Length: 334
Image 1: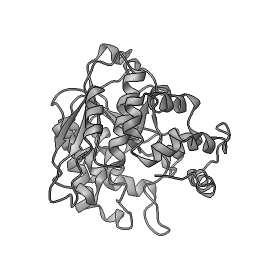
Image 2: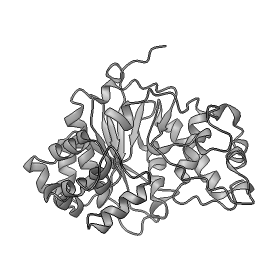
Image 3: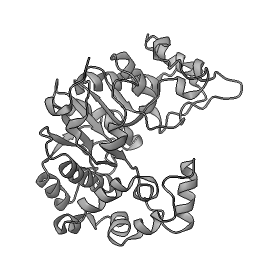
Image 4: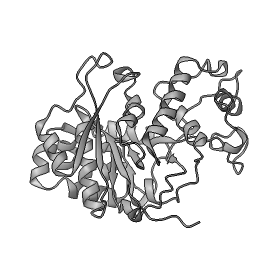
């Protein structure tokens, strides 16, 4: 079956926006979407957590200038309540906000620290078979010397939720090698209904947090809880690692840069050019320069100075080495 390009499908895009860094990142995301995908006709939704007992400080976007700039770029700010996670686990935003999205409408979630660098309508999404970002490393689990290894750890979760473990495996990878097991970065994911996806995501995440299998007694779920639950959700809904053709997301169409110093150090020239082009208009510049990392890295040229420290074709294998070089040269900001 040949998948349709997204230009023939209707879907929404959602990010999370809240006070401080995420608000400015949301503005960069919205500007990049409009710049790189002028044919995208869906809704851009900025999900905003609301004040409540789980947020000691009000998480709403306070800046009227940022809210206005987002709206001028066609973004819609939609509120949602935090009932289970809040400030104690802000990554839970991407779980709880799904219930505030339009029911039954296909969606793509992106982490806010992402730029759209190509035409999103060219991506052949199969919204009936969910997937997520494969730009990940072996962050979880961490097998212990005398405890279960990868198979035992992951199988305990599949068994907990009555899921078929064997069909989730990539049999081209060696036994007990981390890539054999279904694992994603939660930087993007998609499905045909946010309510169905969100209900399953919440159910699994809470069950893992509150009543994990005994095999996981030595494992940490903070900050990995969303990425522990995500592959189980995707597998249970008929998705997997191969439902989206590679090369689009985390490729020519999107970049999950995470932090601006890392963007300048390791991402493609197209990503750097996109960032600097969308940030150039004076109307946006007046707003974006209110955030110190954008002001210094983009507008004062520190990003370009940091970039020359690296050969993007021969980057250090480990991210920590990139971070250390940036820090030792005074270019680390977050």
